[in-house]
Length: 178
Image 1 (cartoon, one colour):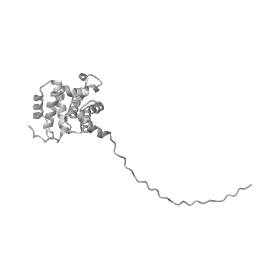
Image 2 (cartoon, helix red, strand yellow):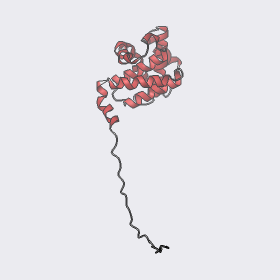
Image 3 (cartoon, helix red, strand yellow):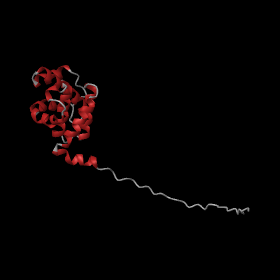
């Protein structure tokens, strides 16, 4: 077994491994314990936040109904017809948005989009992004954080200095010729 990393480090790798493990779980219906053990023994877990990987892998199946309910209303098809990779990504991201307030919502969405780019079908990252943007708005714990995104920083004002120049104007008398 690899050395455990402290929480907060290498979470991107933990999400990636959790995606792979949850995909395997969804396809094979093996036990989470067995899949976790297999990953810890057979996968390269160096540089991975193993504790975070374990949390995602264990907590998502335990809270599956609640997590799925966060995003199913935004799907354009039944959950059963959703691509298994997209489903796993939406589950990981929805879990983090609802349960891990210590992770900024923008980071959660960016990580979900990146997983979709790396592992999903063409343009699945756009689909995942659109759904997660809607999910974050329905999570009460994120209301204050979301409110910050709609505020625009005050515009910086610049002093405009106008220097008056004296212009030379010459007037030539033109005599009318009659």
